[in-house]
Image (cartoon, rainbow, N blue to C red):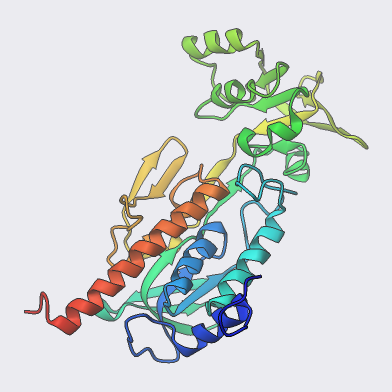
Length: 341
């Protein structure tokens, strides 16, 4: 830990400075009012809070404590954090934002009422209320697993969904893939990069298109028709996939395509515009992560199913920087009388 000129440690100095002033503009904020409330405390939310804390913004993170990657033992592909457990990653982030004076509450935001130029009044499930000049929503999504016996119990162990997250760790083992109902061949083709032994179980999905069938053949993927009844699990872990007709196909790893549901209730209640994707409906944001609702930004899995941790953190960073600029110029324009009618 570095020393500052006064001899205090960097963390202690940051905490003291944050206690002295939370805003760079000198805005007078009441005790229950924040420059920014970040709803959601995962990678996107903590990254946003870190940027805002360093920008001397009075910031609150409200976290329901339901991270999407909680079942995973580790996360991969995040430079310098490769292999770190999700729990350790979040704990480190929470310590970092606290060192810059960012407040954090455990709870669920159940309502947000626009107050015009004054921002938003937020209500938590336990009745607590806070005011925010701006909102960043990073509430993530939930994964709905296929209703196949054993899948939920093995989720995050040898039942996986993201080859970029886990492919290296299970490389060259025998893979099974439960076909996604919308894109039946896509995941099997993707995971063939990590194993030459891949079996695609169509289950309830339609037959692949002729083009995808040709691609599957070129990749050496075996296609099994018929519905999957459940998994065969022994002490060593997953050993096979059991079909409804009694067949058992030996497999060591199973990839599944989940149905994703964004936790966007707060955003849609505020009237945020959405758009359709192959993986469902998601809130629309522009290149600055601003939603269609004035004063509201969103980042992370709440705006897309394929936002891995590193992407979510990047989105939170970018959204926070733009929210800070929005606040800065709003305050300067107010003081200078710019744009006043």
